[in-house]
Image (cartoon, rainbow, N blue to C red):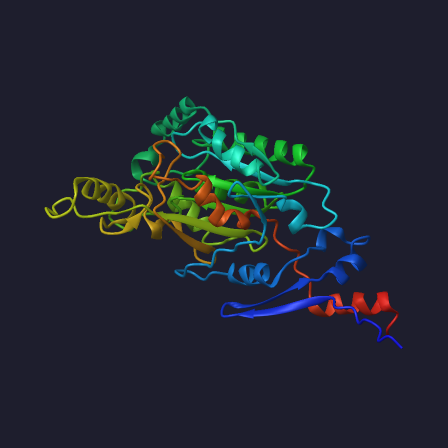
Amino acid sequence: LERPRVPQFFSIIVTLDGFGFVYTKDACNMLASKAPSQCRLGTSRELSARASHAGRWGQRASLPRFDARLKGGRRTDRSSQLSVAASTKRAVVVLPGLGNASGDYDDFVQELEEYDMSVTVAKVRRIDWLRNAAGLVDINYWKGTLEPRPTVDWYLNAMTAAVEEAMEESGSDQVCLLAHSAGGWLARVWMLENGVESVDSMITLGSPLQPPPEGVVDQTRGILTWVTENSPGAFHPEVRYVCLTGKFLEGRALGDGDASWPARLTGLGYKQVYGSAEVWGDGITPVPVGQLEGAACVELEGVYHSPLGAAEGRPWYGTPEILEQWVDYIDQPKPKVRVGSLLQKAKQALGVK
């Protein structure tokens, strides 16, 4: 007699950072009709990367990479590899940084769409940033104790419209926020006011997320301090936080005669937000300032701050070869399912008591 095949419903993998499990094809076949949103195929390589996503404060999280077919050096057919019974595209909202306009991210959007994502950019014009000057009439601006509203109302409203548009266009009920530069702390303000029912992930790209040390003028005139006090670290447990920072140039003190002028001038900028010039950063945001406690913190070598000024030899976070290194963080987080719950479902399907 042929020995009956025993179904395998999940695999467990252990790494130095922790452990996790992934549904196998047997489990997917069983659950797809009842809970397709919970059913995902994965390799041990995928799960190893996922277990590493817990990246602790101050540590560099391992970058996940998925096996995929290559066409012209690029991955293709990615959505069919990563999901089962998926009826919606991954909804992504790009939040422009200070001084940037929506059009600055056109190439970035095109790259993301090649990964079969539905991408919406918050509608921001370069001239819109002048609206922040409204804070000048508030006495708290001059005291350095400015709060977000009403100064940045215009941006928060644009973000609300973008999230609603992204969900409608994709058919999804949650989005991943890709927040560039100031878009990072503005997204934290938005989540405090609007809740996170529509957000499952926030990935910051060179965002200043920490207020300056005491004695250093807060460039946001107090808003970033307010955000940190009201939304410290990875504040919302329902949201996966990923902080990307670039190591493009190490700053040096202005009086360091042995250092290059670019390093000294960049160090001057770092000092205004970090309190010290001698630190690595992306040319604008020092690495420590772009990280949140409790988030997966990823440092990217040789990465420049903005799409404006990016060029060959000076890639930014959205340049194709850099995007390739972190794009898998955009994947929708897996629902938290207890092992015991999965086993119970498996027993019920097999008729085992």
